[in-house]
Image (cartoon, rainbow, N blue to C red):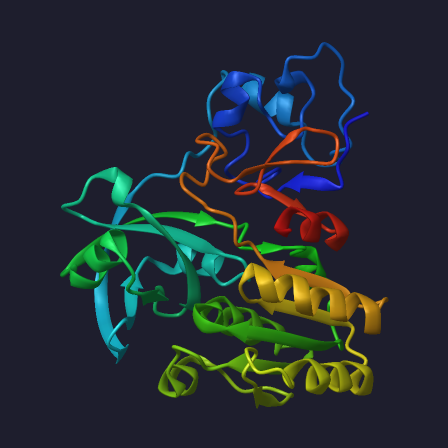
Length: 322
């Protein structure tokens, strides 16, 4: 039987079956992996039946569309936020934690498409906001764009262990969100989402990030905000004391791989019963499981496509990160 400790983030969605069904590489369906029998653990609508009934075609493939740049905010010399008019339906999908899009200038080739986390989804106005840290060719091109950007999405796998924070029974929980650098963008989307029914505390490392950005986009809810320099030696003691004092139900980390490992190990040691979700820091290139840029070897030697694979077991996620 297939091992489904790792699942496809798109299974059962409007984007399933996807391109992987065409080449016998489906992550869930054994029939669409080239085997004769059905031995999947998927309890939703049969992926194989959907593929056959759909005349063996990809369902609702994501395509580029032009989105108006409705505003541009400069926070630092290398940090800007763009507001894009994408429509209410798209904004609803983008409001879920872990959502990201591919953006490129309308005059650029397709290989300029850059994956960026959604920071805010204004459903009423049909606008999403993305924060761009200007680093090299792709982000420089986005920063200079005028009028419109080409958008492709929505993609869903920006957070590993996503069910810990989006499951329908996540209500009345005590949650800690830790963010460093540009990880603040998905942290804001996550905090604003969870504040509806939970208490959310935030720990933010302000290195290379603007306080004005927090003031403009972070909403209000029950919880506290602490500013900690994660590069300072004393942070571990302070955070460890906080974890033991507050006894969080869920901890969500939006940091570099180094701090995912360091803080993740601290959470597992001090709060062994807490759910843990982490940012997906793998190199995302196509987002469709095709190019192989984000693949890693699993424990059984299988290649795992981290743009589409998610896990509810942080031991799996942490082993990939290492």
